[in-house]
Image (cartoon, rainbow, N blue to C red):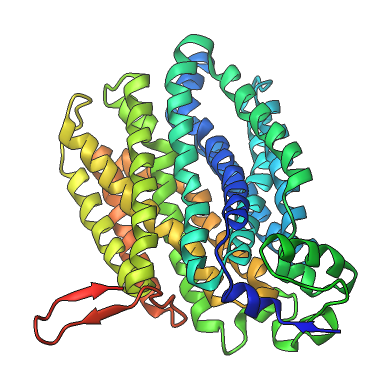
Length: 454
């Protein structure tokens, strides 16, 4: 009987088309997560008009969904470590899809709040498990890029939500928007039940699933016999990595865990102040519904481009330099937008929305890859899920923070709140020790002083 170290063969193995297909499958779940997460922010102006309510009346409803995401992120991470990332991810997708569909029936604030809270449980549970799956399907050299490309689908989903909203809301209304937001992920979830495999690391820890693991590894190009055994079964787990949130605070992980908590909290606060209230802020400043939704679309398009660029930079320069530079750029962009006049015809304003959304989303999405790098596989979903859950506290407070800023200082204070939050993100990221190292080496020519990758 041959004993196989799954971590070793995957970490140093090939980057096959099948692995890329699996990353795409996890990414699709996060695209739809991003769509459903941003539907309510786009629908607020329509709801204000139909229900004859002011913007501030929606603060609690906007906060209750992220509260569900906070709880769902923590529970989803723990469930992923205990019962499998695939199982937890698919349950999360079906849950948020069904509840988003049900949101179309809401006729008052109470019902809307309950449905968004329950949908939030699924929305929150999907992300840590998708990030963990992406990190464990990919070889080590491609892992930061694979995780970031998965999580970048949050702003990509937001872009689709903005496009969908700008076309559906004026003609068909907000209920149709939520019907579409529910039906599509239900269909995807049912397809993935059949085709998405479990994490190879998770299966390696459970001897009864070794036959399934052998089939998967053969698809990844590894020639294994049917009687292969795998290291890392449940009986060999280290007590230092037991499946408990307390494992995140042992001496080896405490500083990095606290740094991740601060980073996730204030970065999600900044991002969701924009996601939840940018459309309402701009319509209040005289933008049309379509123009305001399109502005959020530009914000998310910048997020997609920024996150991909950040993933490439991390491969070359590592996470510390890349993420600190992006945080500094987000601070500068936020205060620049705060000083600008809001005009829906302004090309320079649209460009600044792209830059601000790009830098904010780039930091947020790459934090998932950083969290996946900090923790070992036994507690990876728990670590990512708990960090995201702490971040969701900032997400919960975002609607109150944004409305408070608007009330005391209008749009300039609203956009300045992003910059203030990102200053704290910068400090938090600087404290994290287990950074992602560059995987694309750089050669420095001492004759010319020129750096070139190989």
